[in-house]
Amino acid sequence: MKLYSYWRSSCAYRVRIVLNLKGLAYEYLPVNIGPDVSEQTSEPYGVINPMRQVPTLEWEEAGTIVRLTQSVAIAEYIEEHVPAPPLLPTAPLVRARVREAVEIVNSGTQPLQNTGVLNEFRRLDGDGTAQRWAARVIGN
Image 1 (cartoon, rainbow, N blue to C red):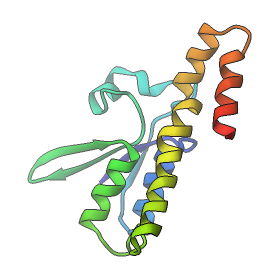
Image 2 (cartoon, rainbow, N blue to C red):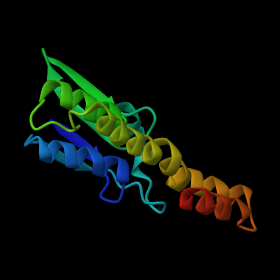
Image 3 (cartoon, rainbow, N blue to C red):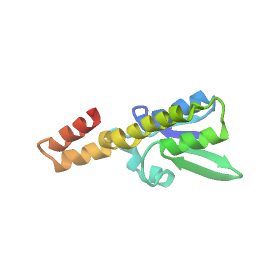
Image 4 (cartoon, rainbow, N blue to C red):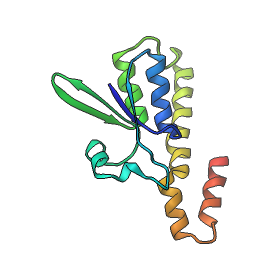
């Protein structure tokens, strides 16, 4: 199993937590998504992940290379194949609260702090208004 990842990516970090919690061995393949490097935009990585994002989990299944992207989808896939130890509590309301927290980070906070989004803010918004707006939204 291979994990294309970047050490500062919170999305990739979530997948590393799940893999380590489940005790799964994986090869860490760094993809430097830093703004001055942007390895994710390279053609070779575009073949691995057409969205050019991290993380990407890759493994072989029945002789075919399988790749899965997006941290929540990867975590759910791993959970379904390696149920112990469980990622979610058993009580329905507590489990829903965990999913609620995941969604807040995954769709409420993460997109606004994403390097690509911040770079676009900088390009479009010379006075920093959009970046201040994003910081305010994340802070709420």
